[in-house]
Structure formats: structure tokens, C-alpha cells
Amino acid sequence: MNISTLRLDSSPASTPFHGAFAPLSARRPCPFVVCSAKPPRAAAASVSAAPESPASRIGGLSQVSGVLGCQWGDEGKGKLVDILARHFDVVARCQGGANAGHTIYNSEGKKFALHLVPSGILNDDTLCVIGNGVVVHLPGLFKEIDGLEANGVSCNGRILVSDRAHLLFDFHQVVDGLREAELAKSFIGTTKRGIGPCYSSKMIRNGIRVSDLRHMDTFPQKLDHLLSDAASRFKGFDYGPDMLREEVERYKRYAERLEPFIADTVHFMNDSILQKKKILVEGGQATMLDIDFGTYPFVTSSSPSAGGICTGLGIAPRVLGDLIGVVKAYTTRVGSGPFPTEILGQGGDLLRFAGQEFGTTTGRPRRCGWLDIVALKYCCQINGFSSLNLTKLDVLSDLPEIQLGVAYKQIDGTPIESFPADLRLLEQLKVEYEVLPGWKCDISSVRSYSDLPKAARQYVERIEELVGIPIHYIGIGPGRDALIYK
Picture 1 (cartoon, rainbow, N blue to C red):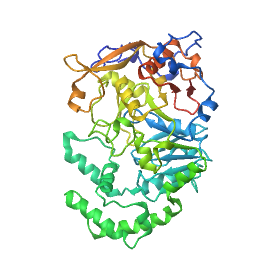
Picture 2: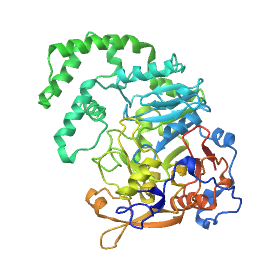
Picture 3: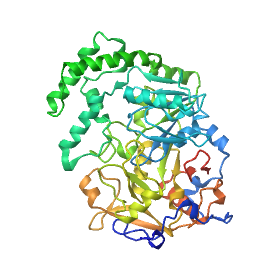
Picture 4: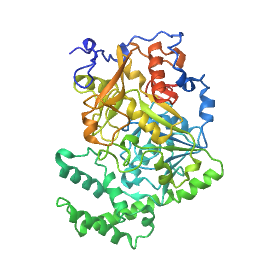
């Protein structure tokens, strides 16, 4: 079908878009529009203040700031962290593992896909911390470091790994796949990177930490206990003396290589705070995947919301300052689980290809839908964001109209006041949409908010109005410079 003939539908979950996604090269460039958008209501006046300069806006961020995801991950957190990192001394990961996939571009436009190393690594003066709340797969970490070094990014003396972080072994990944196979049609849709099994080992207190690598006299017994436990639980997991011997020898080599990176990061982080160094925390995954607040059980195994910063780095809640929530101009999720504003069929496919919505970690196609304001407000309540970064606004550029999911209702029309925990209710509810006009032109070269077309500004300001939090950063492309400061 010629995508230029497709049209939007008022029933997002059933039929294709009205409005095509033309190739970027074929899009009509937007004229610079100077006229004002419809003024926001008085209640939202505080979110539409006159913009600061980029330098003053970033420079005004708190000593300890954070960047967290507002949806089901893949919002583009890595890009903002990379941009902000130039103004911070330390960038720290506090939770998750190699299931995080942050794609960033350096000043020459070269693409880097990071999974464990914090996104601040491309800035030469930034020190990167992998905190105690992260689960660390050493083969993956070393592969990432080798890839960075091969591309001219020095990691020597620039990465600290917490001695309290738990080690994720290859067998955790095998167990992850076996567990998903057991669940059959009820599978979670994990990345199969072993994250859940590793956190399970941690929580039942038989996990192995980075500090255990310094005691190779007891390491074999601890690893044997872990492997034996997995073998007793899963029939498909073959374990014997040869596997243990090979793993121990491998980890002796890893321990030697990792030693220069190992640190008491709790002490380091708190000492850095006392020294008035600026710290930026980089969240992995997002609040809608939080083990407590997400669409359980279709969630990750850690706390990607604000609370995870303190437990994952060992810093006090009172030192936390500005938290920036990163949210796409639409919604995506990978794996199973409820997705109220999902667009099924060809419409979802078109949005997926227009936004190149394929996982950085797994390459899996992401499910796509309209921006869910109910879920976004829920995330903002939990995290207390001071501002938002709206990403990938350019992906919507070819649509004649755009929908916002603004309210949930039960089948009988009864309003649902908050984001529900009940999965059955989430799967059955009806979404109430607002329809806004599209701008139908390429905005990827725009660098000033006032130069965005009126309809694009109306879309941004309507989101601010509904959520009650200012949007300070707007992504209009993948490159470092493709960012509008509002």
C-alpha cells in the first residue's frame, strides 16, 4: 500500500493511520512560524515561562540530578545524559543491567550502543559509576569497554564498579530463557539477559558480589552453590564439574582485569557530594517497568523510579535535586503486558518504521501507540519530576492529526481516577482521546522553540497543561544537536 494514502482513525487500536510517514528526505520543510500558539490555561501558566539559555538551564540543575524514563523504556534517556554529562563531574547508573540499551552519538555523528557503561563516557572529563544496585555481566562489560577503546574512547581510570554490585553469570541468561519457556503463553517478554534470575539470586541471598572476586579461595564454593541450585530447579540446565572448573578459571582472569575498576562507590558518591562535585544519575528502563509501580508482572526486576537512586547508589534522599523525566511524543513498549493506547495493525507498523522502533539491546520490534497522559501523570506523581524531555517529536511530522490518550473509563463509562494495578481492568478499559492538528512538515532542522510550527507548539503545550510539568527539552532527531531548549 502506498503510505501516502493512509489516513488516521479515531479508533487507534483497530485500523491504520490517516496520515503517512513519508521518508525524511521527502518531507516538506516547515516555514519558520513566528505567531503564538493558543495560550495555555491559567492553571498551567507556570509551565510556560520564558525560556532560559541552554547554558543557564543546564547550569542551574541541582548538584545531584537524575534522568529517568516515564514510559516502558526506550524513551531516549541516553542522549540527554550524554548532552548533560559535559556539565557534570560524575554520571552514575543505579539499577538494572545490560537489559538497558542507550543509543548515543558523538560529535562526529558516530553511533554508540551502551548497555552497562553510563552514557557520560563519551565526555572525556566525566567519571562513570556503576552502582551497587546494578547487576554486572563481566563479559558484556569488557566487550563494551573494548568497543569504546577501539573507537577512541578512553575508559582507563574513568569507570568505577561498585564492590557491592552483584555479578550476573552466563547461566543466569540460560535460566532466563528456561523460565520464559516454562511460562509458555504467559511469558513476560524479557530481554533474556539474565536480569531477573540474577536479582532473584540477590534477593534469596545466595548471589555473588563483585567483592567476592577478591577471595578466590571461597569463590568456587559460592559459584557451585549457585549452579547446583539452578540445576535442581530446571531440568534443561546441564551442570557438572567441568562447567564449574571452566567458569572459575574464566572468572580468575576477569577478577584480575576488573580489579582497577572496583571501588567502594557508596563512599565515593558521598565523598563527591561533600566535595560539591556535580552528579548525574542515569536511570535504566522506566517507571512503567518498575517492580512495584509498573504493570506487574510484566516489569523489570529493579526500581527504575526515583526511589531506586538512593538504594542503588547509597546516597540519602535529601541530597536528590532535579529529576528530569524522559518521555516520547508517542508511546512504545517491548515484550508482553497491557498497553492501553497501543495502535494495532498497519498503523502501528508505520509508526514503528518511522521512529525506527527496534530494541537497542535485542533488536525486537517495539509495540507503538499514542502518548498516554494517564500513565505519564502517574509516573510524574511517583518521581516528582521538575521537568520533562519530550523526545522524537519529529516522528509525528507527517500526520494530519495526532491523538492524546487523556482519560481511562471502565466499559460502562465510569471514569477511572488513576492508573490501575489490576491487569484485567487495564486490558478492558476504554481510552478517551483528544485529537490535535498535525503540522505536516519536517521539523528536524528546527533549533528554536519559537520556530516550530504552531501545531507542534500546541501539542507540546497541551501535554504540559495536562501533566502540570514543564517540558524543557524537545528531541527532534537522534544527533546531539537535534535538541530544542524550551
